[in-house]
Length: 99
Image (tube, rainbow, N blue to C red; front, side, top):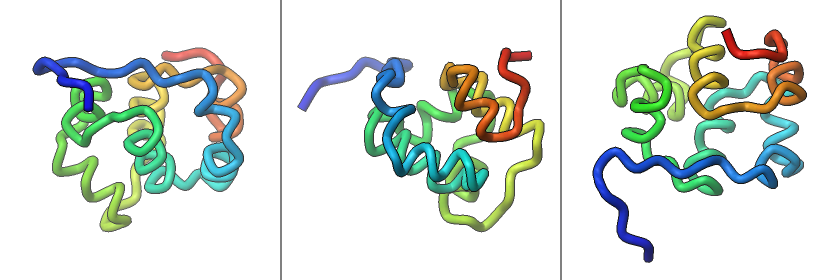
């Protein structure tokens, strides 16, 4: 297992965005599944996701466990934070370019 230093965040592999389960999550606007897939395939922890999005780790956990539904602003923050490509942003119903 790779050792990581504090504050380290993996770049999301380009191949992640074309995985069928990721495409399905994007098209369904299923943020809980998307966050789980980012954790599984890009190695993002909840703290990493909090760091790149500016959303509290506890809130990230609530989204992942479907205890809370993210607002459109939150979805944009997630897309911006993980560097989501334009075609994936469109699948989520967002503008293709980050804010």
